[in-house]
Structure formats: C-alpha cells, structure tokens
Image (tube, rainbow, N blue to C red; front, side, top):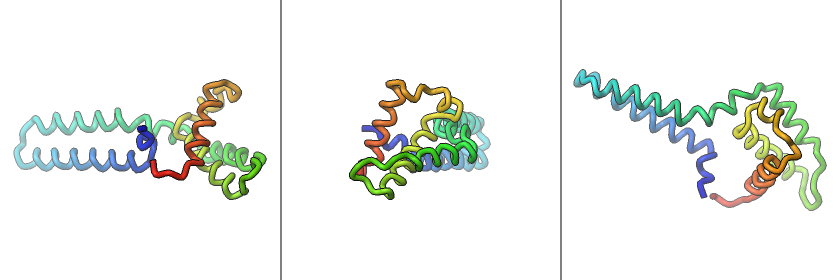
Length: 135
C-alpha cells in the first residue's frame, strides 16, 4: 500500500519540501529577526536529517567496486524459462537497486542468503520488479 515510500521521487519531494520550509524560515527571520524562526530552522534541519538519513544510509554503504561485484554476479545467473535475457537484465538491475536501498554492504554480506527473511525479501522484490503497474 505504501510502496511509494521506497521510490526516489518520494525522497526528492521530501528534500524539496524541507528546502522550501527552511528557506521560508530564513526569509522570515531576515525580515523580523525573531528568534522563533531560528528554532524552526534548527528543528526542520534536525527533522530532515532524521527522516532522510535511512534513505541515504544504504547508498553510502556501498562502494562502486562492491556494486560492480554484486551486479556482475546477478547478470551471470541463469535466465529462467520463459524470460528473455533483456528482462533478466532489467530484473537484476531492479533487484540490485532494492538491495542497495535495503542493506549496507556489511549487512548484505552478513545476511543469511538461505534464510527465510532474505528469501522472502528477494521473492517480494522480484514480484515488485516484474509488476508493470503504476503503484
């Protein structure tokens, strides 16, 4: 139901909203010199960091070399019956992006790939990636 929370557009929208709120408070502070606008600015920045940090945490946790290693391992897997190679490449790319967002590199390496939680995550991710719907 809340799949939009994982989209990059949601993150960008949040960033824009926070920038608008902060710039409005800066403008009001310059006009009035009231201390309450400084409190609003600080609270907005703290809330923005608290809200957006989980989205960026996973992106920071992966080096380009680590991403390339994982992507190449996905691309070399066997193509399932009834699927074209192009679909496998786009599916791999989508699954990789979801893994980059969900896990840091260390968490991914430490995760039990045969565990039920990871298998369920991969199954759900593949279903989401294969789904062509808007939501």
